[in-house]
Amino acid sequence: MKPAKFDYYCPKTVDEALSLLEEIGFDGKIIAGGQSLVPIMNMRLSTPEYLIDINHLKDLQFIEFDGSKMKIGALTRQTEIEMSDAVRQHLGLLSEAVPYIGHVQTRNRGTFGGSLVHADPSAEIPLSLMALGGTLHIASKEEVREVNVEDFFVTYLTTDIMPNELLVEIHIPVPEGRAGYSFHEISRRHGDFALVAAACQLSVDSQDRISKVRLVLGGVDAVPLLITEASELMEGEYLSAPLLNKIADIVDEAVNPESDLHATADYRRHLAKKLAVRTVKTAYERARSENNERS
Image (spheres, rainbow, N blue to C red):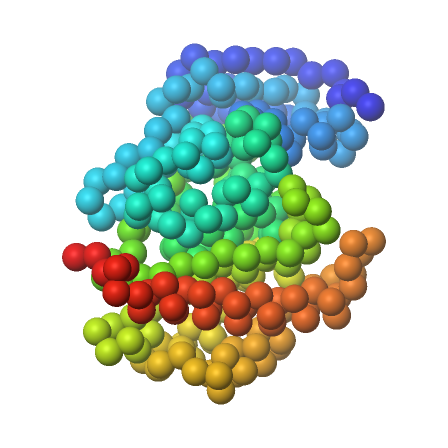
């Protein structure tokens, strides 16, 4: 199918884009990589009257490290994240997750910010950002406001961003000390949407006790699911088989998967427990490794 008729705008500056958004409001839609929006428009599940192409806003395409956090522009291509030495060195979780996104062609066009704003609950970037605890900077004509990732995802394909606003950049704190990470997902074929995905960012103290951990599951609810009860259980403890069994029990209670053509709810629940245990174990072993310590 082809999309419904729309008017096309191509602003050259962020201010120009924000003015257009202020004027158009609910009738407009931002397009960047188009990897999610174009298929939806072709199926006429979305029929915006105005399309605002932000691909000329090069000020929103960057990766910067300031010593304590990574700053990533919303227009940064996913393949730039994948190939970045700085991201690989300081945010290994993100480097590990991005190659699961679609295929090379998808990542060459898809943007970091676009994946977040699309807010698919099984997508790799939203899960990773939730595990890393990032902050989103959202601009309008009046202000730039900051939103913690925990408050950004509202429900399926819906975020805390208004029609007159534009996601401009994302700040991600770099894990300190002895830190480990892990990302796993199960899909029917490589490049397909994940049936279930799991991301874990974890730190240990000098005695190998877990000092901080964020475990997130995707594909099991309407938003990326931060398993806070599991984090509370793990912090201050050594990882052990009994502790992993308790984590699996917590996940079993926390998730709320649905059945569809690709998998039953029971199968997704089973995968969620297995992937949660696997990601925590891998992240813990990486954090304990002698060569993983950072000052």
